[in-house]
Length: 256
Image (cartoon, rainbow, N blue to C red; front, side, top):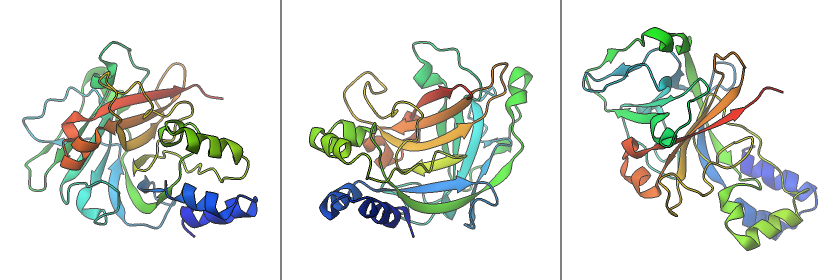
C-alpha cells in the first residue's frame, strides 16, 4: 500500500466524504526517500556523510558542510514531478552547526552542486574547525512513494477554500508524518514549525519556490539541537537544472 492508498483508506475510515478525499489526493506529490541500510530494501542511490569529490575549479573551504550526495543515474526516470539530471551526482551542502545568522544567511549557509558523469574530481578534506563535522559515511537506499500535504503547507494555506476544507475535516484527513530523514528529494517539506515554502520567499519577491530536497542533521554543539536543511529552487530554475541558484533555509529544533 502506497501513501495515497493509505491516505484514502484511513480518511474514509474516519468518515471523510469520498469526494473530499479525491480532491485532497490531487495534491499528492512523488518523492524519493533516501535512508540508511535497514530502513528499506531499495537500491543504493546515494551516500550520507564522508568527503565530497569535487572538480578542481570548485572552491570549498569545508563550509558549508557536506551532507550527502545522490547518484542521479540510480534514480528511476520520471520519479519526481520535476526533472533531475540523467547522470552524474548531486551534492548537497548545508550547516551542521548553529549558524551565525546574517542578511545573506539563506544564500551562504548551503548550496547544491551537480557534477556531471566523467568529470575529473578529487576527494576534499576540510581543515581546521570544520573537520569535526565530517560524518562517517553510509549508503542511502532509495524508496519512491507519494507525499501528502498537511495544514500549514503553502499549497493549503495559500488557497482559502482548500484551507477551510482541511480545517473542517482536520480530525479525519490522514496526516502524512513520514519526515525528512537523512535525505529526501521532492515532495512537501517536513518542518517542525513553518513550511519553508511559505512567503516571504528567498530573494525578497512574491515568486513561489519549490522544495528540491530536505535533510535532517544532528549537529555537534554545546547545546544539542536537531536541524532540518531545506534546499529550495524557483520552478523555472528547477526545470532547467540550474542548481547553482538553489537557496537554503534552515530550521533549528531544540531537543525535547
